Length: 208
Image (cartoon, rainbow, N blue to C red; front, side, top):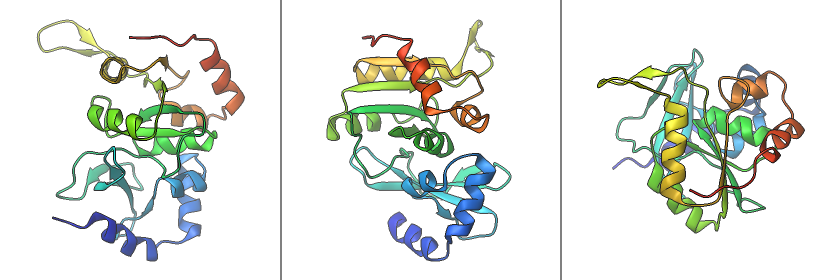
C-alpha cells in the first residue's frame, strides 16, 4: 500500500507559499483555505495535490488537479473527503463537492467538507459527523444542467446527490443552490459571508 501521507509531506517540502498564493488567485479562493485542506504541489510541473481522507481523518488517497483544470487521482487512491483538521466551532458542516469548492467555502469563514463527487463518499460523511459531533448540515447543490436517464426522464446530479446524502446521514439540514454554477463560482464572483448567511437564513432547518 502507498504511504500517501509521506508522499504529500515530500511534495510539501517542494511547495512554496508563493505558489499556493498563485493557485488561490487563479481559483478565486484564499491561499489559507487551500493550506487548511493540505494542498501542495503535485510532484510535477503544473499539478496540484489534495489529500483525500476517510471519516476518521486518515489519508486514503490523493486527488490531482492540473493548472488547466484536469482532475485525476494517484494510482491506488481510495475516494475520500476534503476537509481541514480543525473541528467545526458550531457543530455545523457545509458540504460541497471537490477540494476547490471546499476551499471556497473555507474562504468565507465556514467549516466545510468536500465530497469527491456529487454521489460519492456518503458513509465517510456519516462517520465524520459522528466523530466530530456535527449536528447540522448545510448541503450545497451544484446547479448542474439536467441530464437524460438511460431509461427515460431527467435528473440533476447536484440536487440528486445532495438528497441522497441528506437521506443517508439523517441530520437536520438546509440544502442551498448558489446563484452560480457552484460555490466556488459564487465566491469568485465576489460573494460575501453576509450574502451566504442571508441565503442560508432564508430556510428553516428541515428533517428528512
